[in-house]
Image (cartoon, rainbow over all chains, first blue to last red; front, side, top):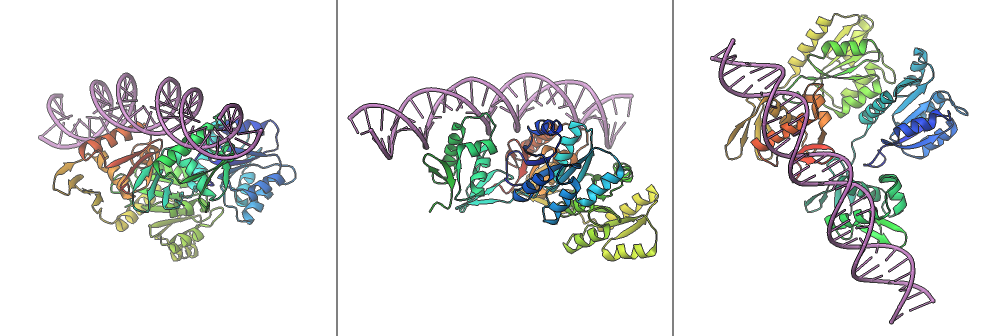
Length: 224
Length: 224
DNA sequence: CCACTTCTTAAGCCTTTCTTAAGGGCCCCA
DNA sequence: TGGGGCCCTTAAGAAAGGCTTAAGAAGTGG
């Protein structure tokens, strides 16, 4: 997982102008989706960012799906990949899996089945979320609790933990409210939500966990 | 045994889309089965969860069965493994056993014989169920009773004990209702069953034995 | 076959969590 | 000193999720 909480990130590589957005819309509630329209773009995004799972069409312009998967695997990308093909021929399946895909579906496909297969993929390949340390505190993403160096244990709500993990993932980086919102909260939420959760964290953990950068946003650690 | 109660867990690594589900169905009454369709997935599941026994096909995509067994053994996994091969050649048998398999069968095989060999494997390798401690309490799996540090004795039903043992087997790990259901209850049960048993445990033992992680599931211990 | 225990379901109530919004305080600049 | 912008704090309604209960089903032993 790139970040401990929130929807998993999904890279969808699909050139069909109808099917691409359609799949994206279907999966939107459960994943943060990025749509790439050709193999080259897919390769670039696949190599430069961390994804939780990828869905790759077999037939793609600029770079074929199989070639794309091979390229990603040869660069050490181990993200689970589901390959989509127009044909259900066994040959195609084998080629795809041999190239390094983890699962396979042929079009036309059932939306529910796609969702189920993706769940299975992200589940079996999800690494155990490692604990995150924030100054004198340690966040255990699984139980959503923060333990101080002296043993005191504070349990956080999902949103609180998500925000804390996001900030702590890049100590020193200043996040704007908009960045935090779009990555970890619902699209329509007010920027003020962030303020509220920052306040919760300060109350529950320590007034100094999160630093305010006036006029910009929030930051954690590294703020010597 | 990974857990004191219920059917033993079996990891089946088989890529054949017909044979895999077929074997799974055959063994379903006696084992909790997880089917992995390729070597990589098998390796991941084999390393990240505890299994009572594994059945591994020799020819697998992404990672060969022999390589898979070697990899598991080199990581210290001592679970009994039965290897399946398409050919009955003695060479194959030797290679498989050398790689660390405990038993060997060649396809096509007799369902009854497979079941018998698995019984033999799980029997010889099964350690006696040891008592499990949970905070101030001690669960004796054999008598399904919990004794407090001060001697009070509470007897549990089979399901109560199974749930408690499952949670206590990995203190600190947060289990989702689905995980608990699929591993320790019948397939078709409603997630709400878990809530009911958690309630029973809290009533019989202590309101704090099991911790709720809102929106996720339940956890035992490690919560200071 | 009956009595008793255990298992499973489902419904209603209660608690926690999420989200919004409004008032107050602080700081900078005119 | 006054105004404006920005942030902090609080509170409260809505939504989601968990707890508790009770009752029928299924299983077990006499």
